[in-house]
Image 1 (tube, rainbow, N blue to C red):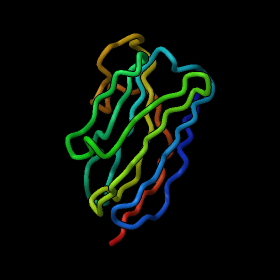
Image 2 (image 1 turned 135 degrees about the vertical axis):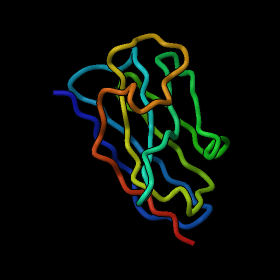
Image 3 (image 1 turned 30 degrees about the vertical axis):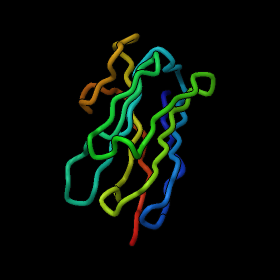
Image 4 (image 1 turned 45 degrees about the vertical axis):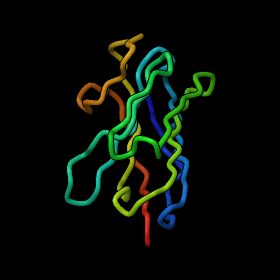
Length: 127
């Protein structure tokens, strides 16, 4: 049974930093894209960042320069380092993993391309 478990969420003040982790179990994703999405109250789930098997990355414009996605294939884990946090970053953050298309160069930004999802972790940025 495949599981993605996020951790590292919580509350932080504006301008602060936070690091999210997503540990996968049940299969390896070292050859597949993994991504982070978020959903704020009353809004649709939106793309944040994704990383390919080769560590190529894609970011939403709203987080570019502030967030960094990385992966440790030995630990089957993906990370999201978030710096210079803003109130509009407040949301539930979800980790996602693809299983169908290995070795892609540019990772997916479309949530429907991902097959596995974590349960989400709340990030709250207060002023």
